Image (tube, rainbow, N blue to C red; front, top):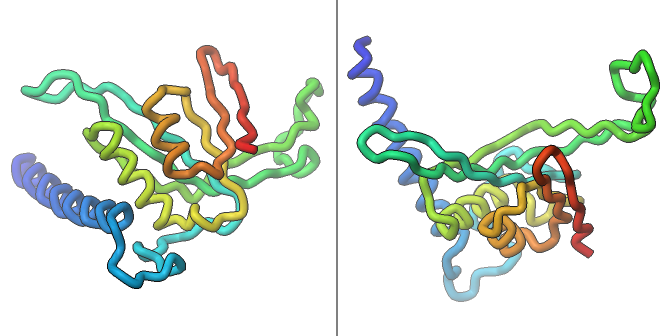
Length: 178
């Protein structure tokens, strides 16, 4: 298969997925029909997370041909697994003051990404959260870099999330969301 054929197939598939995801985001965020029960799911759940979950959102600059630099926005939704220190697989040669801290592992990821403005990203973040069951998971956290647009859309979509803001050099500030 030629590179041009592969590019056309990939772009065509991407356009179909974009149309589907946009329709789902509009359904998730739009007004419901008269008489719709708040218990009804607007989107089918896919691999829902019942226990601990995390939503992280970020932006990254990418260089696009003929368009220049653009910011792609990305959200990742993950299941959180916590292991006590004694369950962690690799014992350390020299114990540290953090040796007794629980180990945290993120898995079962799903993503949404696009060249969107923040408000459009918010719709896609919320739709992906509904697909993953974040509206009824046991506990939700959010780890982000503190960009205002990320804080605004995450607090709007998931006000129940406890937030941890990562700063320069790995410094963190935790807001318990209480």
